[in-house]
Length: 382
Length: 101
Image 1 (cartoon, each protein chain N blue to C red):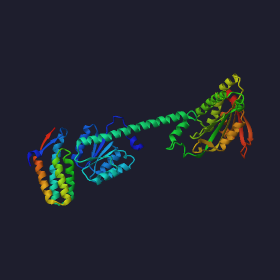
Image 2: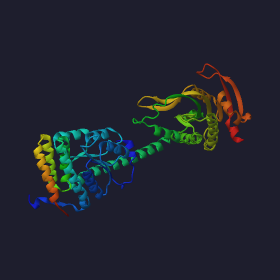
Image 3: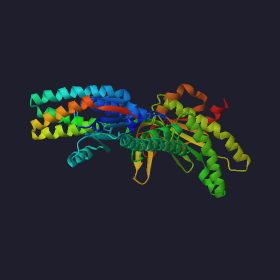
């Protein structure tokens, strides 16, 4: 159905039913109007075809009683034009005519008329036909209202479900971008500057070999609960969660001029938030571990990547690879950042917590990358 | 024609519209006569078509009958038949007795 025409007529359930009467005979127009007003309807009257077309398109009445033989545009032509326009296509039209031949009726049906009323008009028949179309109209309106409510509910359900896996802002963005085929971001694949943060629970893989499976899941849930919250608090977008590793993007898909600073704060937040969890694990006899983090900036491609059956909205590119390599090198409680990222956060990091690792040849990269190590545990203690 | 043929019962709701309606019918007679004098059969056909539609809508069955006669006569070019019909229409309007229920 036409979303624009209906939206323009969102009205309370008891809103007046508006009828446009089109007849060049003032006596006939007056009669039709009088009968319908008595039935509680609101009636506008026009006396020629051109005015009828303008009125119908501008005011979108709930029903049109349309004479066939009119000065200017004839009833059939008006009917055809209104039914061909998305805004007016669903307005019921009753052709009111003294034409008795079958050919005229067929012409009316072909023009899209919803019903016919013969002249001379019998008042009882007029009322019955209008009421029938009004019931259909009301039903259609109610169904549309229900459809809209269901759509809102569906999106809310999706939003709640998505929000357990991705940042609430990204969930909102995906829902607002959903196309008719249900796929988001179809036209949003693009190359942009990003800041990528990888976080990993150091030594956890070895730990999982010595503890029970249900305990592993419980520990991972605790870990991810605090570090994803840290990412969300700083408006990071979580792109993947694999094993004990988390990829968070900044400046994507929303512009964030302070992306590097946000990534830095996220790293601090993750370490600080995870500290009580880690303390609990250690007290419970678990093997000491900690979060290692890598941050790098640069160009990346963002988009839907995968197959029609399984697709990920993700980022790929040099910045992501570099952040991953830095994370792999980071010790528990340590943050490794690329030179470009460090330049952006230099003023925020206590110099005593920073150590340059020089230019490091990262696996898969032809050029050495300047790397800085920041001891996050000591930053947090300050 | 006896008086029974001139009695019309109109819905009470339409009572206030009837003086306008009858006034327009008298104007219609003059329009019919002018069109006939000009031998404008297309105009006669349109006027007859309109009379056919509006007459009995208000309860004036005879007006619809006159309208059909004029419309048919215009299509066939029956000038004499239309002239008689217009005269009878004029006479009818002068004699019609309207009551409201």
